Amino acid sequence: MKEVKGAHVPKTIDLNCDMGESHGPYSLGEDARIMPHITSASIACGFHGGDPLVMRKTVQLAKEHGVSIGAHPGYPDLMGFGRRMLHTFKGEIEAYVLYQMGALDAFVRAAGLSLSYVKPHGALYNHVAQNAEAARELIGAIRAYDPRLFLYMLSGSLCAAMAREAGVRVIGEAFPDRAYLKNGSLAPRGLQGAVIHERQTVCSRVLQLVTESTLPTLDGSTLSVEADTLCIHGDTPQAWKLAMDMKKTLLAHGMKVQAPGKLDKRSKNAAVPHTP
Image (cartoon, rainbow, N blue to C red; front, side, top):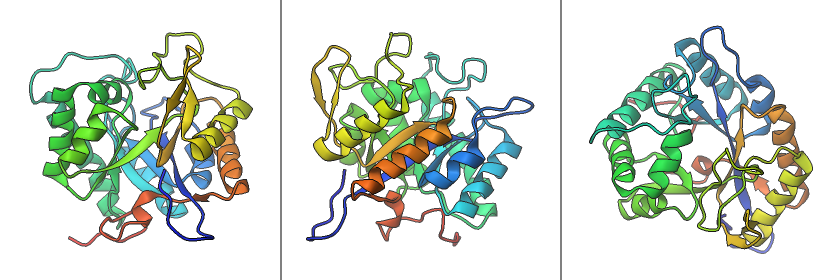
C-alpha cells in the first residue's frame, strides 16, 4: 500500500472488481450496483466471460461513474469460467492476452476513454503469478501493446517481481475474501475455507491489510502482504454489499479510496479522453 508523505495526508488504496462477466443470455453479478462503490473495474474480454455487448455496456457504466478501466483477460474457457488450468504452447498466453486487450480497448477508445491496466483472470492469474515462462509472455504482451499500462498482480509474486524488473508498473493486489497459503499464494478454491463469505470477517481482514500489511494463512501463521489494490469478486453473491462495506470501512479509518492511475500523471485512466 502506498503512503504519501505529509502530516495529514491519508493513505490511499484502490478497490477493484471483476466485472462484465455475463455473456449471451447468462447473467452473472450485479455490475450496476457494484460500480458506485469501486474505483477500478477489471472487465472480462470474452474468453472466460463477457461478450461484445456486455463489454460495451460495462465500459459505459464505468464511464458514468468515473471508474478506471482494466482488461481482465483469461484462458479461452467459458465452460469453466476461466478457473481451469489449460496447457498452452509457447506464445499462446502472449497472443491470448494481446487479443483480449485489443478487444476491450476498442470499446474503451470508442467511449472516448483510455485503458488503465491489465489484470489476468482466474487460472491464468494464478499460473503467471508463479511460473516464469508464463509471466514473461504476459509481460511481453503488455510491453508490446502499451508499456504505460499498469499490471495488477498478486502482491509478492514472482510475476510482480519480474514485471518490475522489465519496467512494467505493478500494482500489488491482495484478496481480503480469499484465504492464503503460507507461501503467499491463494488457497485453491476446492479447499475448505478458501473463499470467505462473511462480510464482517472480510472487512476485518481489510483493516488488517491496510493497517498492519498482514493476513492470516490457512495454517494459522501470519503472512506479510503489501497491497495497493484490494479485489472484490463480482460473481460473489451480494458483492455490491461487500464493496459498499469495504469502502465504508476504509473511509471510516481515514483511508483515501482512489484508483492508482489517478495518482500517476504518466498514465491515462478511465476519466481521461483518449488521444491517438
